[in-house]
Image (cartoon, rainbow, N blue to C red; front, top):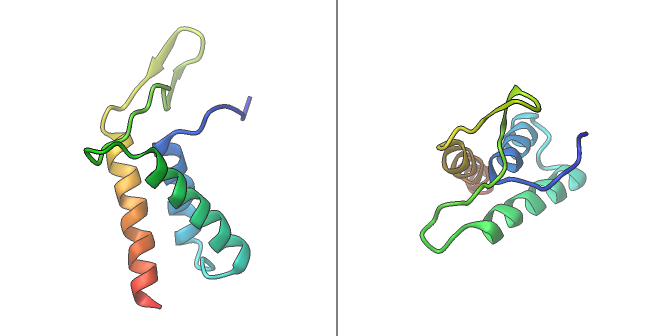
Length: 90
């Protein structure tokens, strides 16, 4: 539990949390943010979208899982946009 393959939407959730925490300019936080952004950019398809084979919703583990089809597009774009805004504000 708590381990597995990364997904674009879950990486974006972590990035959004780090960026919202207010100390995104610290060395440790910035390193984690930059690694997350690089993951998103490195897994982005040529058409600008992401693939996500794993389910990101809980549902009923072992029986029924939820997959929100637009999460994998919305959240990575939001995280990248917030990162860009941070860079432009410096």
